[in-house]
Image 1 (cartoon, rainbow, N blue to C red):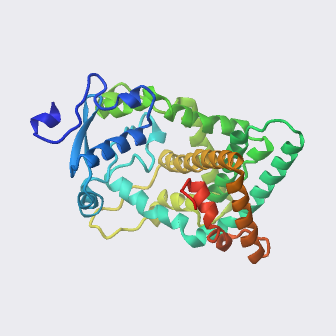
Image 2 (tube, helix red, strand yellow; image 1 turned 120 degrees about the vertical axis):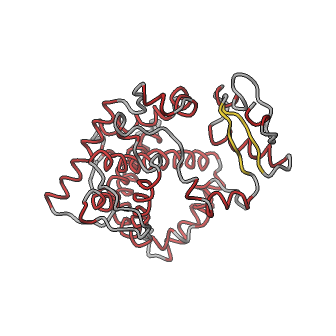
Image 3 (cartoon, rainbow, N blue to C red; image 1 turned 90 degrees about the vertical axis):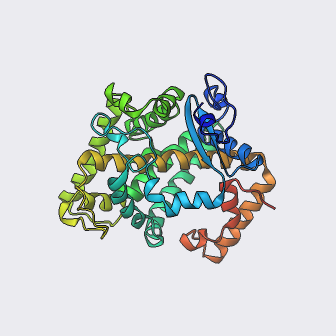
Amino acid sequence: SYWKKRKFNFLEPTIPFGNAQSFFLGKRGLGELFGDWYLEMKAKGWDMGGAYFGSKPVFIPIDNKLIKKILVTDFSNFRNHGFYINEKIDPLSGHLFNLESIKWKHVRSKIPAAFSSSKLRNHMDVMDSITKLLVNRLKNMAESQLPIDIKSVLGRFTVDVTSASLFGIETECLKNKNAELMKQARAFFDIQLCRLFNTLVLLIPRNILIFFNFRVFPTHVTNYFINFFANIKTQRAVEKIRRNDLTDILIDLCDKTKIVSDNSGNSLPEPLTIKEFAAQMHLFFEAGYETSAGTQTFALYELAAYSDIQNRLRNEINTVLSRFNGVLDYDAITEVNYLDQVVKGKSVN
């Protein structure tokens, strides 16, 4: 009755799921559910509306001016995602997506420097060398005439690329090494895709979850990645390696002598602990691994199903390569527009 008491436009809920029955029954993902709510309210001509995720009231802004006000003008009041975070019991939950207030702002303000155009250009040689290994591996597998588990291959490929580009290490997963790393990386998404865990985190108040020492990440996963990333940090310190990449940015945030004021009037933030450092590294590792592998897998499936699109894409790539002496460098990639459409799943003419 939350929205009814406030005489607010809302979607009529049902017990016990509220307006989220399709989510709880496994028919819609969380993003799809919120998209459905938004479109239904927009079709009704509402500027804003209410819904229920179970018994939890949810506010949905519809009007673009209101959305802009929330995301820009009043952003300081809405910057926290409100997701579960318990850095003491569950250190890996203290990553950028969950961090709040000043700590979030401090880390968030430094991250974009790792993904500038110049930094991405510097990663191209690393990506190119690992991609050549992928191509050779696929050729060998194709010659065997046996089915290929392409998602598994691409998963190992993206782990190698992410680790080399962001952390400066060779994991050699494409060569079927580092099986433990792949196992632990997969564990993160097995947990994230667990509907029970998602439901608990979204429905039960944070203070109750903290009271019962609720953990999103199993202890073995937490310990593995804290040690994994701590070793990277130690190696750079011992060998005096400086790559000016994401890892160096986060290492600097661990060093009190390299933390500077943001001129906001707030006191200097505390340096990141090794666990906080590991949480940020783990976030970008997982984000680069599964999302890229999944996107590539679906794209290849569609290309296999639609040979006309595959041929058009191949022609575009060959045309662009001919202008860049056969080298698919950063500038060449900006010109393969049809490839961009295919990967993003956009409608094409």
